[in-house]
Image (cartoon, rainbow, N blue to C red):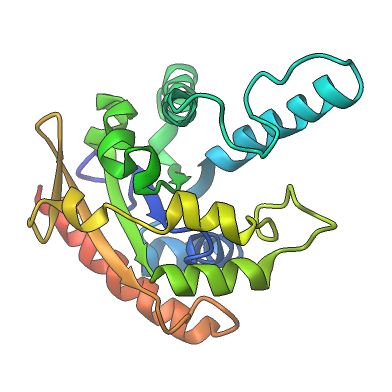
Length: 244
């Protein structure tokens, strides 16, 4: 991060499905740029989210089987990945997309904050397995916002937001209860932090983090409370990022 900047270079948004990350992002998108910069230290938003990549694999497998009569490439008949390494491939793809931005726009972070979003349960290695697939360039510029909810709250909100007419939607997609429980019931966040209240350690790179507590669901139809809590946690995260 360039010390003269007053905004985050990279903000990594993580948490269980339907925890509130996408509502936080949607709120920031619709906040006037000068307010977003002053209150939240966020510049022009550039989203890197693994969900559209993942959903494209589902669509490709559907086309292969239903229209071309060919075997699935990514998922089995129940919609689970055939190979666990595909979870890591998604993170590698996020890192690759970030690399392209730095390559093509040398002054990229003079005007942009990259929001990197994904969720990982312990079923496939959790955050311990995911974060090492982020590049040094990304990690060295990153700060992490983890939105904490219980599995029960994740399940409730996942059911609430699902729109079967728009299963590919960032804000309206959902998982069947059984799949949500299998993949995301267990979360390794507390172990991943390693007891450090302020920094993650990935390949000896110190990455500042904060936790956005959202069991009371301030991210659903409570814009004033959402804004106040987001300002508080991002203010703390900014202090850690500046001090590191």
